[in-house]
Structure formats: structure tokens, C-alpha cells
Length: 408
Image (cartoon, rainbow, N blue to C red; front, side, top):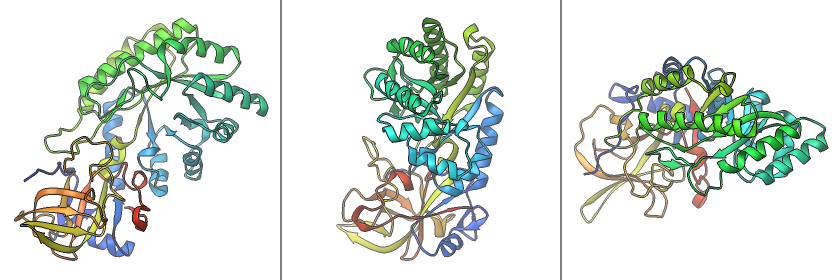
């Protein structure tokens, strides 16, 4: 038997069935019309934001990294909860604008920005986090063509990384950002070019559950920003400190201690270098804000036994939940939190493999998991599905098409 990850504590049962947003899973499927279905909870997102605001220094701004989940109603809901938005394409910018975000609340990061994307962002007044000297050259030329002062910051590739992070974004050669030793000259050039200089974006890693490592990384970010500003003789109007806050996906994972991070960051703010005294600080978070608020519901369409192993076959799979299948960068596949939603409070009685409907052995949602007996027609719930699910998975693979989504 292989353990499943921990189900977030805010989920409960009614009449034995999983509840989401005050309604049963089957009622939500009936409303949507069919499975597979992603469901996102407003209450869970709002509670997470309230906890975060309480733990973090009042001075700190919180941005939403919309790549985690760009579902329109969810994006609109987030607009009233966060201080800004981080995007990674002009497509995301158009979605953000439709959801009511102002360009001046928006920053645009990511390597390989096309000229048309730079043009649209500069014209609208979005802050561009430059990833290279070449991108800076193109941005300045486009701004001259438009006769505007572009809002420009530099994404820094730091020499350090976030210890224990699931995905390292700093340290060594990276496609992201400008190497730290090249940043002062570029910053000075942007200021001398009369750009609207916005400061630095320094992101060292993601999906960490180690509060001490995150606090250490934030201290390193603040120190590096001060050093770069001093060498370039520029101010730092804004410092995006990145994110890195993780959520528990797997057995033995423990929730992140955000109180520890908040206390450590407040100490940093109490003793800032003089050249950061007027800086506006922000963190950008995606999965931490919405990941545990989402559930993926998929229906059992078959049970079968092969060489003594029981398979529960669903109408969903990796085409909607690539990460849960273990095919989104995982070295060793481990089980996400998973349950039989129709029998949420029932005792487990059998060991099964929960698989999807695709004709590939990669399509797995649960390996050797201990579950209540699931029959054809029952609903399976995959948790921690609010981030990097629907939009980060190959929905058109084998002609399957996207899952439906609901915000409740």
C-alpha cells in the first residue's frame, strides 16, 4: 500500500458525501452537467488570504501569480483580495484586464517575450520584469516608438537558491533573469534612458515547506537588492521577492509555518538598509493561495481486476491533472490526496489503483491506495487541484477536451 497525501482540513462530509462550498459533490456535478469537473472554494481562498495577511508584515504587498489558476471567475474573486497580479504572457494580460485588474497593478515576467507582447504591455503601463539585456534593448526601442516612459524592472538571477524548493529558480545558469553581476550596469542604463524605473524581481525557488529556508532566502533577497542598488547608484521603488510558499501534497508533508516567516520578515523590515527604506515590498504567490481550495471530481466508469490487482477506471486523468499523475516534473511518483467523494467518511476496505481513461500507462491518479469500495458511478476526488491543474495539463490529448470548472 502507498499512502495518499493529506486531505486539506477544511473539507467535510454530509450524509457520507464530500462537501464543497456548502454543497455535496454530486450536487455540483449535477449543476455542471457532467464530470470531469474542477471545483474551487471561495471560502477556502478567503480564509487562506486572511491567515496570510495576519501573519505577514502590514507593509508587505501580496500579489497573485495567475499562472497557478487563470479561471475567469476565480481571477475576478482574487482581484478584491490581493494587491497586484503577476502575469507571464499577453494572453494572461488580456484575461487580467477582463477580470478588472489595472495595468499599474500588473507585472509581466518570463523569458522570450515577443515584440507584440512588449508593445501591448508598455502601451498599457504594465511593469515589465526584464529577463535580459536584449529584452531591455527591445523594450526601450518600443517605448521610443510609442513615445512613452516604460515601467521597467529587472528580474535578477541570484547566485543563491531556495533550499529544499521543488523547483529552483536561482543559482547558476538559468533562462530566467539577468545574472546578478550584470544587473548594476543594466539598471544604471535604464535609469539613464529615462525609463520609469521600478526596481527588482528576485525569485529563488518555489514549492518549499521549509519556513527557515524561505526566511533565509528572503533575507538574501533583501541584502542582494541593497547591494545591486548601491553599486548601480539607483533607488529601489519596488522589490518583488518572489514566492516559494508550498502546500502539502504528499504523505508526511507538513503545512508551512507562515507565522515564522512573517516574524522573520518583520525583523528584516525593522532593520532595512538605508537605500531600501522607502521600497515597496511584495511577494507573489500562486499555489499557496488557491491550490488547496480546489478539487478535481471524476466519475468511476469501470472496475477491473488484472493479475490480482484492482483498477478503478475514471473518466478523467492526466489530461486534466498532469501533476497528480506524476508527469509534471516529479522524479518519483507519489500519491496526491485522493478520496472516494461519494463515500468520503467511509472506512477503507480495499487497495486499488485509480487510473484515468487515456490509453497510456502514465495515466494514474492513485497507486495502491487504501480506499472504500468504489463502484461504477461513484465520484473520485483529487485534492490540491486548485493550482496547476486545468490550465497546466494537456486537455486536448487524445481528443478528450477540457474539464468543466466551477467557483462555489
